[in-house]
Length: 277
Image (cartoon, rainbow, N blue to C red; front, side, top):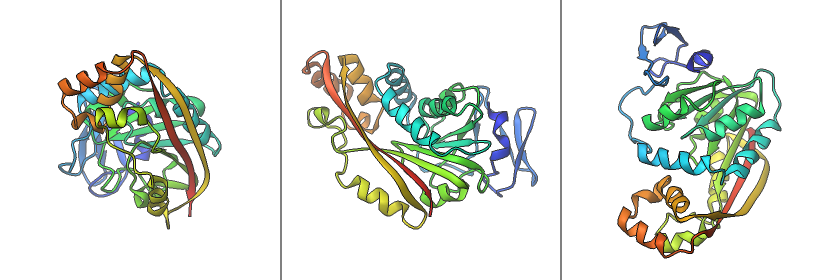
């Protein structure tokens, strides 16, 4: 719950600590933030540049992840996170979406608590009920994160963009950053047929460049396996990501109908673990 992680958060306006007063978070300089009835709080300092995923995208992601198709990815992230044991673990996931990955990590670290951060209010509503030890926060990762300096022991970035300087600021000296990125084989069976966003084959190289000066990689592992998906599951897979915006519903349905039912789709990612440079 949000109350469990308030001491890790910071006012987005002045950076000072927050405390809970009834259903409001207050900082020592008088800035206040109402907690939504669904249990999340918005700590945006102003209007966000992006609105994030829609309610429909979040619902599709929840349906797909509930089906267990990405469970090996969740397990790989949890295993990488657990390889950095620390006292009083506190986990931050940026671009946390439905909270599935954060919940898996919190289960793997029984004494931990976590913050799920996303710019989408639809995601925050889902995050707020994703795990009893998770708090949900609406925030923009491209501004200063509403998290105190050195407050968290683990940061997760799963299929999400990264603000390396901010992630370094909030991570403890003994902490770890776990990043999951798709390879160019991820969902390759669907890319051309459905007009999906193509993964840059140099993505790993570019990831290293963005981390330089802030983090150093200590481990990198590949996870790849076939998924057997029905047409409805393919629809959820496409609808939950950025490709949902690139093809209208009718055209997508027509192209999915042309696939075998069920069909085989490859999941292919790299899981990287970093420590502070």
